[in-house]
Length: 354
Image: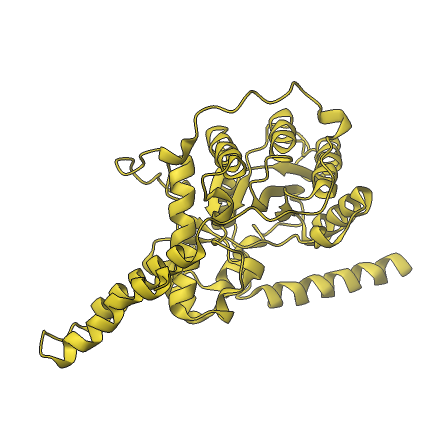
């Protein structure tokens, strides 16, 4: 009998017990029990997962080279996080229902007045941790005093092999460096293409893997491809998760030219007047583009003594959302905001033509 079949026996027993008069559970209890059993069955059937190979040859960024990373320490897989309190949320609750439409608008950041040149940028990274790139990414962020948000894939943190141990180590080091850590599901599958039970496994087992590695339960959540539906929004809300999307995306995983990636990021930031940047720290061209973009942002930094002059201010996700709360966009959706931007661009083209 397979591990999955053995684990599914309690589900069958639950149904049989109902018809034999053992007491019919209410719908919520039955669903929760079934989801737990399916989660256990999926884990047993899957066995030891592996870290899939990603394209890109290991290599550093010339300007970011530093001392070799310290030797591996104890495997943090055994961190006991059960007694640790959940961290307080460092920003107002702007999307209590975890609505995707609202999250997309919030990702656009605060509104700006005509004489306000202060533009906010915050960095988020998906699909890690990858031991080859993590040391360079951390050095770059430290050099520029940037606090970012990392959304981990849970399967990379599972298993007893050396590769998984390294991934857990770098997950812990990212968290200890003060960066936000979020959940990006167990296997990076589109959640709306899965059954409800499978989607919950993707969310919950990834959260457990991240908690074992870092000692903290992640409360930030980013779905693969931004793919959600109303049922999943409710599942995130029930778990107290903060849906975190993005506004700057140049599809960096599909590109291999760091200069072109960096240039596209600059263009999007100028057009959208700042934003939440999405990059993939597992992709070497993206890491090199990050280095170039950080230098450009530093060279055009916002000057508080000249508040009307356009300048960039790199902030963490908490400050970005606090400013968004203080200066909300006067639109209900991101689509309305985009239409307004297109109108402003056309007016600007007309003025320049005249």
